[in-house]
Image (cartoon, rainbow, N blue to C red; front, side):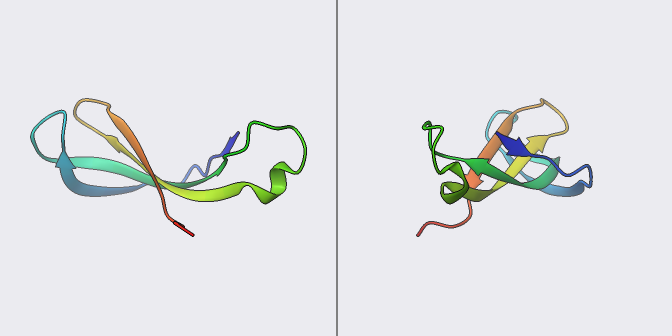
Length: 66
């Protein structure tokens, strides 16, 4: 389950789908990585989520690689 924040920041980034620099909506989400129902509060990590404004492709990247 991800927690979403309504505030977006538009950034120009390369899009692999479009093959060019395009505007992207960027947000930070806290995602639960565990599939177990117990202790899920210990498996939440921040992810940087980008969505291309041109083609709609969404990518996420874990920010904490510990």
